[in-house]
Each structure stands twice: as C-alpha cells, then as structure tokens.
Length: 148
Image 1 (tube, one colour):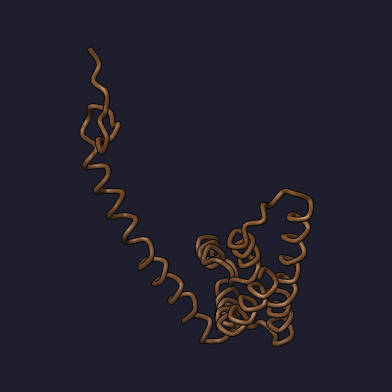
Image 2: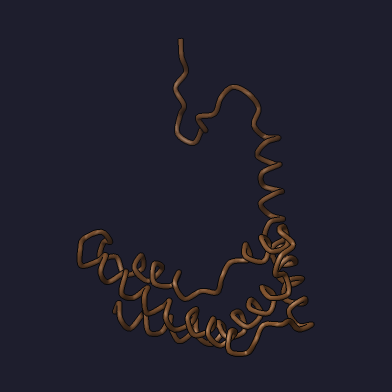
C-alpha cells in the first residue's frame, strides 16, 4: 500500500538528497562573492587605461543610459496596449527596469575567456557602472511616475 504525504512532508524520492542540497546551497552562496571579485578585477583593469576614444565611450553611455530605457518604455507600453503584458504595475516596472540597468558581468567574462578586448570592455564597464548610479535612480523615478 502506498503512503500519501501528509501536510509538511516533502514529496521526494526515497533516496537521500541531503548531500545534493548542501552542495547546491554552498555553490549558490559562493556565486555572488565570486561574481563581485570578477567584476572588480575587470573594472581594475579598466582603470589602467585603454585605446577606447572618448567619443566611443560617450556614444555607448548615451545609447545605454538614454536610448535603451526609452525603448523599454515604448516596448512595455506597446505590449501592455496589445494585451501581452498584464496591468500589474510592479511587473511592468521590472520590465522597464531591465532596459536601464548596466550590462551584465557576462560581457567581461566572455572577453576574458576569448582573450580579446579585455581592457576595452573593462573601460566601457567602469564608465557604464559609474553613470548607472545616477541614471538608474532617475529612470526608476520616471518609471514609477509613468506607472502610478
């Protein structure tokens, strides 16, 4: 006869998964500090200088911090009008916010793995993260006003 799980019991196989659970938890807890160290090392390399011209950096910053959030507003509003996105304000805020945040550390990791453009990507990342501290605050305020 088969036993039914009572309230509070987990529906797990009969094998012991405690070892797997502990391993996954340890890896997950170490992921954020490791990513922070990788990001810091990439940004430190960018402080040493690079051959990226000032006009290229300004162009990337303008697209990343002005054009992308404006496109995010447009896309989320269009998706809301067409019925693809629900009227939940928090959900739409998060969708818009994704267009305003700085690039992921994956860009720096890819340049490290391929051994191409490491100093260039470091310079661009350090400037995008520096400007994002101001622009993200402004865009978040605007997004909240639009969704209120």
